[in-house]
Length: 187
Image 1 (spheres, rainbow, N blue to C red):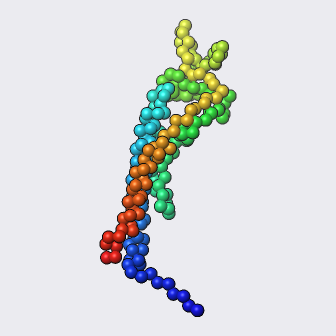
Image 2: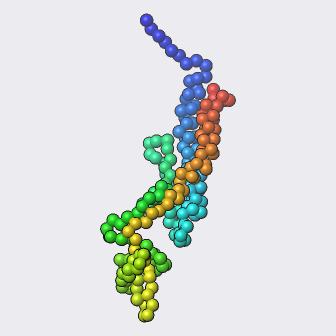
């Protein structure tokens, strides 16, 4: 017994056309969607992350999009190591020291406690210890020493994706409609 199956009508031409259009059309829609996510995430970073001190703009500048090789996919993200804690929150603990030195002066933010240009000494107070320098009769505090710091979640990527998701889905819906267009597909 033999069974033969055959596509009839313009189905073969529609499938051929869909194959030729699919990859480039889908990647165009994904690039457009990724660009929207990056743009929205940069807005979220500027508006939401810098609550206690002004930001440097490094996180915003590091947000990028790239194609995932071999797949129909785009990746949006940052190469900065500390960015994930902003998205989900968490506790920061020292790795190579007993305490974290949290900078409180512009000069302290610039140099770091180990490479500070002048000698610093520890002053233990009733609530916290600090790193300070003696400036004549005055004491200038540059760092507050803490055993851990709790960072609240200040997401910027997830809300950006949620904000532009309807446009991305609409773009992909348009692409699928274009690929399998009923109009002149048989030509």
